[in-house]
Image (spheres, rainbow, N blue to C red):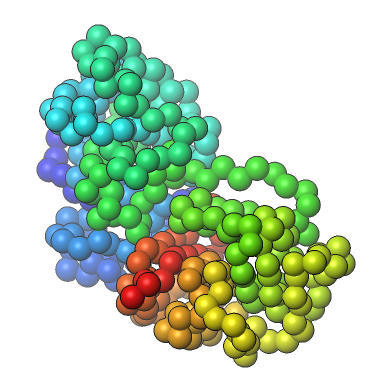
Length: 351
């Protein structure tokens, strides 16, 4: 067994982006590729890391080798017993997943069998703890103890026990969603599948657009995001050079403005939400986000940065800096429904 390291996991297709970001973010550290999509660092992480292309972080991770399902379960339970005081006082969730299946609700059978065996052992060794267990279908409480096993192969994996304090520290690059998976139900009503990005962003942020809230959406056509906003009963100002789908254009809560979203200045501020999924160079999107956040034109926001073939790590650091400067909570992450994109989402400080 090795000493503890911090592990970062990328969604499929984002491995190179994560590797480059870690090297840029921790240039003096020993950043290693452990397996496909899985990286470790020995960086001294004393402040909350912001790693956009990380789907899930595993702080204080232990590399382990176990030969059987029973051995894996026994190892996890032994680790839990070692942290009995934390384990007995907090709600907790057990996430056992294959690194190659991160972000997917359906995990390999071996993961399910290890989890079942952990339950069996806890019934005999630590039955009272089962009452505090949070199932994958439940919304995670504010203070959650997250126990993770990321299987690299049937006999090798990483075990991490993320305390509530570590969860706060790693909040920018981790998620309480099981297996880092945001399950989005299929919806035929929105005119594009872009609606999935908005719903996924809400799940990761932990905030939802609500009835009677005021929203501005820049680059709204054909209305994938607008359809969700209007269905919630929110009021929407939508800007684009093209109109939305005809039924959305007739909606009583919609004000449509034909024009350039980059030139729009809201008449009444602050609005509750800025929403933006425009196709634009990421530098322009950063200028737009800075203008809205520094002027306090919105309370909350969800905005897409679309990269053009490669990631500019200087630009990434600039995005991180403006979010740190202006937001009380935020996420900057690559999501299941993104391609070569990252989503910035958050809530501005009130003071």
